[in-house]
Image (cartoon, rainbow, N blue to C red; front, top):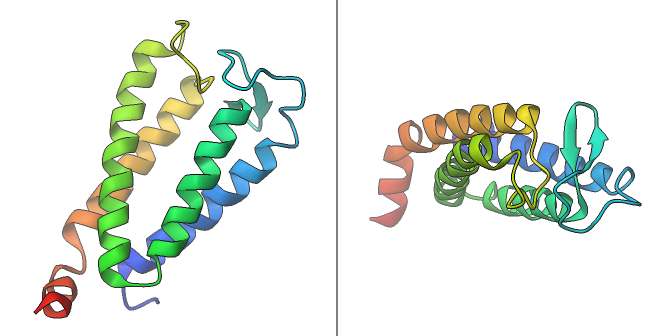
Length: 134
């Protein structure tokens, strides 16, 4: 796995997001499912919907880490989604549309994740994916 940056990154990010999603359920007992206010997990606000999203993203990345092409495609796709969520989160954080209970720390993490996932997804393993499809 270490020979492919995309597989390695997908496995690491997948594990972290899956664990964060599961840990979030430990603190969101009295929080509304899609409430704009969440419970604090370290410095991040989470609600049950936010936790489900993290579990889903973690699982998708872990499954994608099985192949170079899957890791690359999933890193790029999730990176693009996180870029969108990070930018939208800057505007939605104080509105009733904030169904993921995003706060500033969430936005910073989502933007940083987007940059790293997109950078690796778009720049690494191009030759391996081309050879596999040929």
